[in-house]
Image (tube, rainbow over all chains, first blue to last red; front, side, top):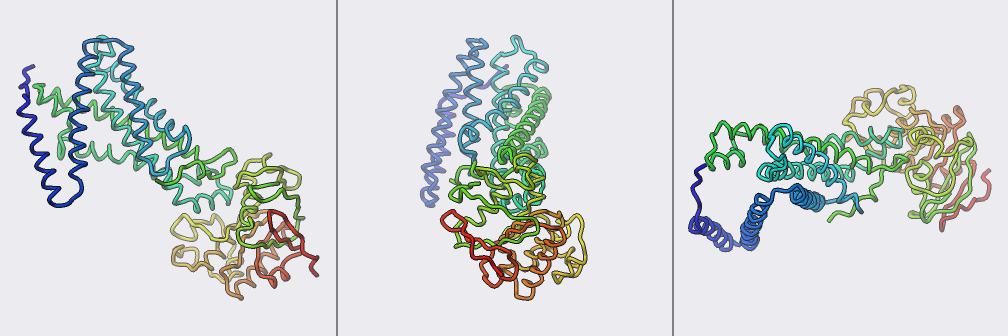
Length: 266
Length: 193
């Protein structure tokens, strides 16, 4: 494929725009110029590093390296889910709940895509495996974080109503049903919106990238549709699983609402 | 039984008996009632007619040993959606007509919600009533209505009642026995006449 290579000047020019924006924000006393510059620096450093990592992985195609990379990605995503929650579960549940849900859904979906749909040789070829897992995991992370956040916040706010239903002899599943449905919907909404707007309002980044790299648009579109569906399935199943497990952990074996299992709001 | 700083306590309420419970706020009266309804983790043994609390499903236990909280909670928009069946004579007894079933919960006063929460609880025909200041937000007329209804329910169904009240006159009106909760212990007041 013929790629037009970017040189240092092109990137510097783009960086200049960010610098100008930072200067203007400073003048307007928006108090974001520092954050903006740090974020821009992080983008440059992190992406350069991942570029080097990918270069290494592409040159050393080995299942062990792939698994190591996938594990790191999962653990980072798990941490991200945890810190995004205002009232997370205390103890190992706080980290484990989101991580396990994402592990099950994103690894299952990625394996299915690699083994059945993409069929690269070998199946763990990093060129396919890492971008696929990355996109799927990144979106599942958003859904799971949103869903869990809504669940724990909802249970906290609705605790009187939930306990009132328990006191009338309702099972915990009935008492938490409304809160749980709300949380599941919240987790799935962004991906539904993304699919609705795809191609009309927004051109998804992956497809745009392939087109920029010289791929025929229709091929790029096919990949994008595949990815969208995989992302949706992964986000959806991951969110449902996390919210279901989480709602269960809000109650003990005597079906008492146990908000003491949540940490205080940060 | 024991729940957090309250107890260990050893007590029983007989069928058809009404026991009033008082004590300073923060003494643990509500905590004790919640533990009896199995809503708080507790130590020791709580049983109803010889059947231990942890021997049956929690849903079953709470239908039998029903707690009326000091502040009522509602989760649907309209009153009627919280009831599966409604005895209109009971409604009338607490001063409502049946239109109240289609009223919006948040249009009602605290006292009205409190009385409706009592009806909601009684609709499940519990064998034990744990009442946390059931007349705290009621005027004298409605207080009397509630007391009369509860006494009739207790007598007809031979139900045990544990009633948190701060009003000595009310205690004298409804209770067979009177306990005070202080320093995590129950102190029985002199027998009432």
